[in-house]
Image 1 (tube, one colour):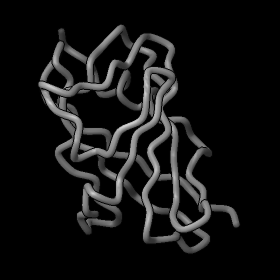
Image 2 (image 1 turned 180 degrees about the horizontal axis):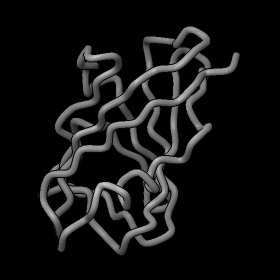
Image 3 (image 1 turned 45 degrees about the vertical axis):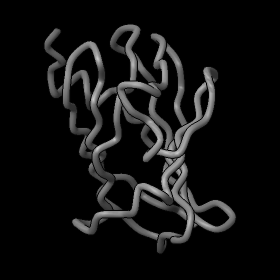
Image 4 (image 1 turned 135 degrees about the horizontal axis):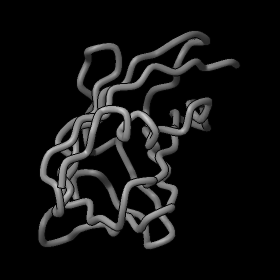
Length: 121
């Protein structure tokens, strides 16, 4: 299955980037098809790779540390499901930030989501 860049752009929930207690979070919404997240390869913020031990993904199917998600321990991403990505240990300054999330989806292979969003407060 091929996923066009315009489809990938729709997965990120614009305006969802915000600081939380002890870190920051953003939201994704699977608007493509049922899928299975089989790995998180990296998350970068302004070109700096963040430790996967600080990244957690939560969906209605469960919650896992990014480094725990694998082919043997996947995280289902059903169609129309929202996923919250939380990063601990770093908060963001007010302004625009660029994130690049590289993941593996069992059904399609490697995907890279590159987004820019603004932290308002």
